[in-house]
Image (cartoon, rainbow, N blue to C red; front, side, top):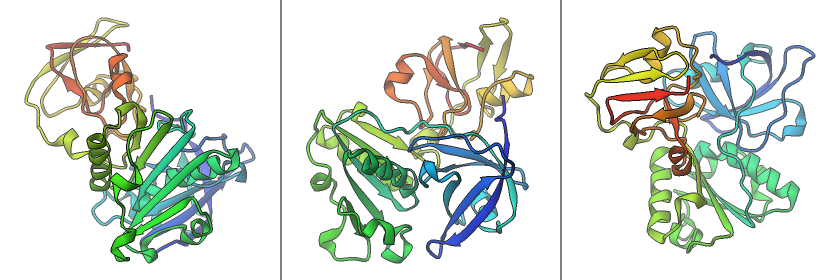
Length: 316
């Protein structure tokens, strides 16, 4: 169940920092782009083949989609291809999806590390427009490596933390997050090490998982640290068909190889597009997108999670 693609044209491509490009996309036809909410991302299908996910950071009412893309040398090639785009180039994109929305809360604390500012910038804009109470903590290696500084510097609710700055302005999670408050929602996005640091400190401070909302741009270390040699069977509830899942394949791999129309996008357990309902079986959750409540409700990410029981039955 691959995404439905729309054609977009690059109407602006400019450097925000030496490593970050800001790219504006407009519809290639008269159909217009679907509306979206803060925290949304789109899939981008590149001519070279890979599908990548990028957060939307521009104001939804602008009529175009704005992306900010870090040129990551260790990436799988998507960021380099995005940086090589030029005004007038065309590419295919999916409709926006949101697995990282603003939730109902009296107070919002946003923690961005580096390129993790992209979804949180959209959140700050939405909260500003709605009169919401929030603070945005933006961590980066330096001011010159941080995107959107000029825009954010005039916002008194934004606190910058630069690694090369005065030690007193560095992020202190105990101080900047503080003790748990039931009326407060916390949002964290950025590199894995940054997220693990903030979330680890939050857990130590006693913040419950339901208050912590995250989006990762790559799989966490914990999701891939332990290889699994177990072989198990996946069964389709609709037909009863059964397929063996070997140690070196994912559930999604096996479904697609056997012609099953299963949803998917990123293949890394971070976008949520492959999530289906688990009917029976004991899952080994290895994704970075589902909450504990969603897992308890029977949701299952076929691209990354596996089984602890001999058989998993899926609502497919």
